[in-house]
Length: 219
Length: 243
Image 1 (cartoon, rainbow over the protein chains, first blue to last red):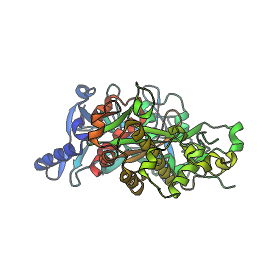
Image 2 (image 1 turned 135 degrees about the horizontal axis):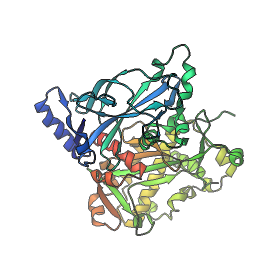
Image 3 (image 1 turned 90 degrees about the horizontal axis):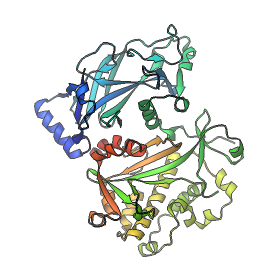
C-alpha cells in the first residue's frame, strides 16, 4: 500500500511551509498532489508525516452531537472511530481515502471518497443482522493545518490526525432512529469503558470541547 | 476552602460545579479546571528551569500550569474589575504568595466565607471567567519569574496581554482537552512577539540557568506522555501561520 506523506520539517515552521507551497505552486498551478510512499518503508520514519483521517459516526448532529458509534477493532479493543490513510488508490478491505492539496489558499486540502467500514471492525454491541453502515460518500475540504488535531504513531509520532464526523442519523432507519441509540456512547461513557484504543482516547480527549458543555443548575 | 480546587462532575446533562451539600455523596468522577500557558518563539518554545519558578534545580517546565481554586474564582474577577493598577516599582517589591495560592493576594478573598465562595460559582460565562483567570495567573507568574530571575518587568507587555485576545477561546492559538488525571484544561499558546516582549531574547539567552529554548519539531520526541504538549503540536503549525 502506498500512503501520502509530507516532510516533517515544513510543518513546524511558517517560513518553510510557505516556501514549500510556493515552490510546489510553480510546478502545480491549481492543486498539489501528495507524494506517496510504500507504507511499510516509512511507517517508522520520523522525517515524513503521514496524514490520517479519523472517521467518527455521530448519532445525530442536531440532537446528540456528543454520542458516537463504538466499534470493536481487529485487535479486540474499542474504538470511537475508524482511522484511515490517504492512499494512491482504493485498497480492498482497507479504509482509505484519496486526496490532494488545492493550493488556492495555501493551506487547504480536500478529498472525496467512498468510505466503507474496513474488514475486522464491527459495531460494538450490535448483532450482525442489527445494523451496519452502507458505503458512505465523504466530501472533505478543510484547511490542512487547522484540521490537524494531534500527532500519533506506534513507534514515532509521525501521523497527523484529522477528524471527519459523519452524521449517522442519515443512515439510520428514519422511523425508529432511537432503536439504535444504544450503539452510540457519550464521550464520558466512552472514556469510562475498558480496553479503549489509544488513538480513540487521544482524539476524544482533544475533540470534546468541555467548555461548551458547562452549565449551572437553576435553584 | 479558598485553596480547594473547583470540582466539576458530568451528570448526564453536562458539566457543572459540585455544590457543597453534594460533597459527601458524590456518585460521579470529579474533574478539576486548569489553565496551561505555552510561550512560543520563532520555531521554538520557551521553557523554564525549575529554579526560575522556585521548584527545584532538576526539573524543567515547557508550560506554566495552574489548577483553579474556589479562591481564584473570586480573586480573578476582582483583579480584572480593579482595572489594572500597575506600578512597576511597587509590583516588583510585592511579597507574592506561592503561585498555587494566588488568591491570598486579595484580602477580600482571604476573608471570604467558605460557603459563600462555593455558592458564588457559576458557569454562566465560562469563557469570560477563564479569560480572566489566564490573565490573572499570567500576570502574577510573570511578575514572580521577573523577581526571581531579574528579567526586566515590562508593564506595557502585561497591559497588552490584557487588552489583546491572545487567550480568546475561539482563537486558533487556544485549545481545550481532558487530561488523563481528570483535569479539564484550557490551554493558551502565546505568540512569539508576546513572549519576546515579556522575556527579551537577549535576557533569556544569557540566563540558561533559568530558561531553555526547545525547537518545536523536536518536541515530537518529548511529548508522548504529556498530553498538553502533544495537543499543542497539533495547533502550532496553524497558529504559526496566523501570527
